[in-house]
Length: 153
Image (cartoon, rainbow, N blue to C red; front, side, top):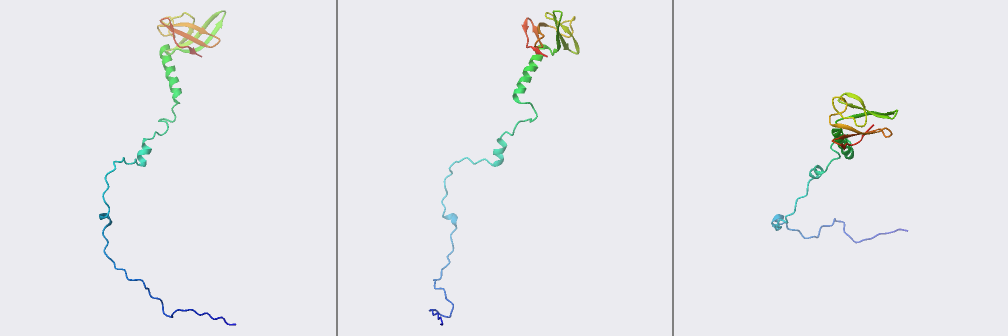
């Protein structure tokens, strides 16, 4: 059996039947666009401006936290009020309570009622011992009869 295919067509290649397009010079696009009024918008900030305006962590990453700074300032104020008196120890023997303090490189014992002066160079002038708490390891000094913050061992 033989199969025969027949079709209509020609042996020559097809030619385009589209009409020729005439090329005309194009007018510039800018002439067609009408100018728009300025909308008075604020320009956006650039990435450098945005990043530059943000804080970057703490100024000093090794500094103590802000709360510790406040506590240190309060401690410093207490030290100023106490005249940098350091409590070295407390004792109670035979009913006599004593605190051992250090001031300006000199140290010695003090008892309740002692006042700073030439006889007790380890206690600043104008300060007096208001109370000594052996159980808690605390010393309370007073200036002009007003107690100062507690000095803790």
